[in-house]
Length: 555
Ligand code: NOJ
Image (cartoon, rainbow, N blue to C red; front, top):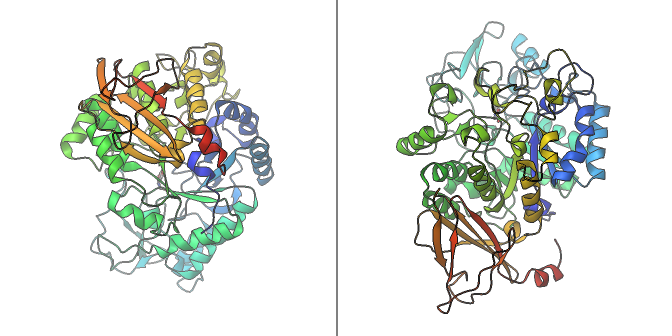
């Protein structure tokens, strides 16, 4: 299937309209505020913005409970404001991805209201019902500890309805062809308004068979992913789907499609969990193994790489011991943990604002195989507010300046209070202050993003692990059309001596040109590179040849 591969070297920035910038003083971010901040994002080097849900919603799961797919929630503005926003992005060469939340609707969606009110409603079969309470009703909850069941009795409908998530999020019966046709209409609508694709929420659940007789391991209907992809690309050739699917590596190819004909991108949750394990233990091997295990298997397939997102850091796919090690390092208190599987903190407080560790973590994110996805506020090292419930602790207003509400809003009250006081308050951690300081984290991130744009090998190329003896060292090489880069990371707080051959097959060692500093490396008489790398250090090297690769240009 033909497509434009822009996403292979994009830098994605994720934000919710609610928390970014309030233009009218009502305490809630809006599209007009966001549009005024586009130059900031463009200046940072962002090439695509992922917007979290902004459609009309009762807002009981921060918009992941949609009550009208075809409108902007009035708190954020109007469809007109949305189009102004996408236009502003286009002018600056930034693409827009939006969340597509179609596993479920809000229980206040007119479809659900009609479905529950009347068994003959045309929408009855848009949801998943059972006369009796199904056997597995107390299993498969996504939010254990908060969510009690996956089947809830509805008095009006006189039946149980299925909900994989909270009870106010009834699952759509996605096997129903009418529902499928509606999903395409929703995509077509937003594509027409200027978006370039979708972050598809809860993909494994969207495509799962649903119903009272379906067991704990429902079959997946992968064909749906091909249908979505095909529809999108017929409408707009460069549009993509970035899937949220916390799956096993061996399942990945089924999502990407073994002809590369299903979804183009997925978040690499597998590597994410092992990245934090590596940071917690100083041992790069689990991460190296995860990278081998998740080689995409198809050239147009691409991972989205992230450190933290708006949910908890999900460690559910580590062993108990591994998870305990990450908890001990980054979220030791019960109040920092969530749903028995994760850590709900922001990145900077997890890493105790240790600049070396933060740089290491981001350097990894920008150089592992895939497309980096930053979360708003992480570029200035924003903190969290653990007094807020569940995942809200890491969804506080963007900290623009030391002014009232962190410069986010001049309203009397904001949707959540801006973080104030302490080491992470807006008085000290804010964009205005970091802009002025050449050594700030913000300016460091900007430089690293600039360099990431200049090493297209990472997005395009073939990744290989360079053998090293030291378990603290992760050494990667990317080859693309005769061009190559080598990236070295030291996961240990102490300095190390590294020694390696940079050639993919051990031959052809050349000078390694240091891209972020001036410490180039020449191979010794035995063909090996040898140098000291500081604790938590990182080096990005070019191993020759980008000009030649760029001459054969279609990037
Ligand atoms: C995944 C989203 O990331 C999360 O925030 C949301 O609660 C669930 N899906 C349900 O939509």
